[in-house]
Length: 463
Ligand SMILES: Cc1cc2nc3c(=O)[nH]c(=O)nc-3n(C[C@H](O)[C@H](O)[C@H](O)COP(=O)(O)OP(=O)(O)OC[C@H]3O[C@@H](n4cnc5c(N)ncnc54)[C@H](O)[C@@H]3O)c2cc1C
View (cartoon, rainbow, N blue to C red):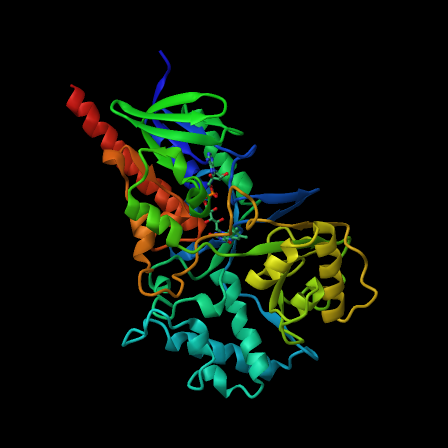
């Protein structure tokens, strides 16, 4: 007789880790099946000597405001470095670093513009976008004399949003800010991949079985439970928890028999998954200006969009580059880590990693005005958008639509089906904290609790 697990968890990212640990601690038998050869999913850490740099999630946002990742790190004995206040950025315009008063005016105008559209009343139409509000004549940004500087600066928002300002719904702008974990940030020492690894080790110590390199290819509802198929074998369980990222699920809807409810499928197809890539350039020593002072450099466009080469795209985009040799950061290392929003990310992914590294180095040398900067000793560009097991960075805030899209989509994606035998977790299933480790963690806890209740109820029925 094959073993019948209490739960099979599909996917070994944060949501799967937390659910596996909670259920194993409750004495439930758990099997985790992961398609990749490694655990962690969108938690992945670059390692070189002592340097550790997160290529996916890196910050525990809202560290002092209740983010459960803080307590998981503590439980696992992992130190965290807390940054109580944001450290200053140096803003570069087309002619070099901006004077302090100009930079301050941009910062306060964007802050005021954002405050103005937080929970707007009456609600704007569903097709109105953040770009409509930010670039309107009534926007506080309109008071900045140099309009192209103001627009370039506003586009820094495209990095955390994961989508272009023209595609972000104004009606739902600021919706998440009232409830998500925001405020101070912290980083787990050694990186997020090691931390999630410790959570899995703890789950395994309590009996969970974790198998990597086993993509799930079929999930079938049986009267007695659920049958799960991979290319290496078949498994049975009383319940299944699917943590497959939503953009991947969109392509894997055919693995469920019977099919998922039509309404669920519509939402899987409708939610937006955004773009965010990281470009890492590691050097022997820092060569960039003010390496001991600034946390990051913000490069505003030096020319209008339209050019074809990667350099053209970088020069017409807003790029944020973190100075990892900088103050207050954990494990300082001579590295510049650039965050690529939609347009530059797509351009970077269309050429070879070696060409991206070379072009980025040339771009940084030029913008920072250090023509004889030494060559990088190592580089890495992420490909979350083209990786078939992520197909994007994370879900984004609600995009503009004809009215059918809203934050309720994330709530609906959390609803179990097959009479409670099949549940869903992952960052895309948490309305309040979507797109973050916190969302994935909370969803894993939520589903572990639901599965425990389901199993207890059915255990009681058998007696
Ligand atoms: C560049 C970037 C920066 C980020 N920065 C931050 C940050 O600073 N702070 C923060 O809080 N969040 C951040 N995030 C978001 C955070 O990384 C994610 O929200 C979180 O890691 C998602 O966890 P998850 O468990 O939902 O999904 P995942 O980690 O993607 O796990 C899902 C797993 O399912 C597996 N899978 C897919 N299909 C199958 C299949 N058929 N069979 C078996 N397994 C399958 C995948 O391989 C994957 O391992 C960032 C993300 C990115 C990409």
